[in-house]
Amino acid sequence: DAKTTQPTSMDCAEGRAANLPCNHSTISGNEYVYWYRQIHSQGPQYIIHGLKNNETNEMASLIITEDRKSSTLILPHATLRDTAVYYCIVRGRGGSQGNLIFGKGTKLSVKP
Amino acid sequence: GAVVSQHPSWVICKSGTSVKIECRSLDFQATTMFWYRQFPKQSLMLMATSNEGSKATYEQGVEKDKFLINHASLTLSTLTVTSAHPEDSSFYICSATDLRGNYNEQFFGPGTRLTVL
Image 1 (spheres, rainbow over the protein chains, first blue to last red):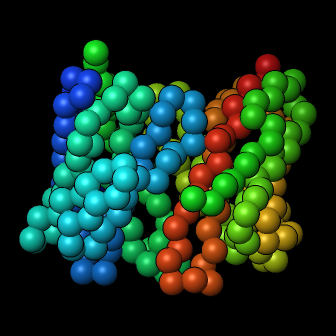
Image 2: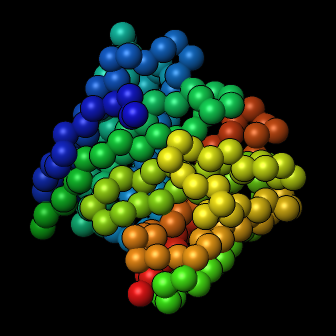
């Protein structure tokens, strides 16, 4: 079972920031938080990951709370092409702990 | 990022026939490949993990004799759906990773849509 809880769906206006929350209250000390997204009928695309520090790359920012029980993925200027299902995944390292277990994700709809 | 391809991108077959799906890592060597299945409006479900040169590890509930996985080289894994039935119609996605490094990111293929008539 997935170790994360995400809202089923969210809407965002084009050009505005999209903030996608994720709860992972049972995360253990050596587990990372990963974000992937899946555009309709395509394979998942890696976005970003982090352990405890906030992270930023060309796609998004990841804010992890100090207790690591929740995080937020931020798309700073959402475009229509960002419409997708976003998956927050808690992942360990090594062996089966490194497997990606997908939950239901959040369906983000970016509207003009 | 690294590129993973799948072939075919879609396939339609008759019930009772077998279908082979290929997953290739194009610019890196994949010690491990994963196979997922995704039914309409559902999330990805991990079917099996395959390590190069060894037998695949199947998730609970996945029939190993029905879903044959071969990972004979560091760049190719195949999934064969044997005696396919309409309930096997799904979107099959592979991912690949190189576990020899410290950073074992998984890269996903574009998926193969299987329709069994």
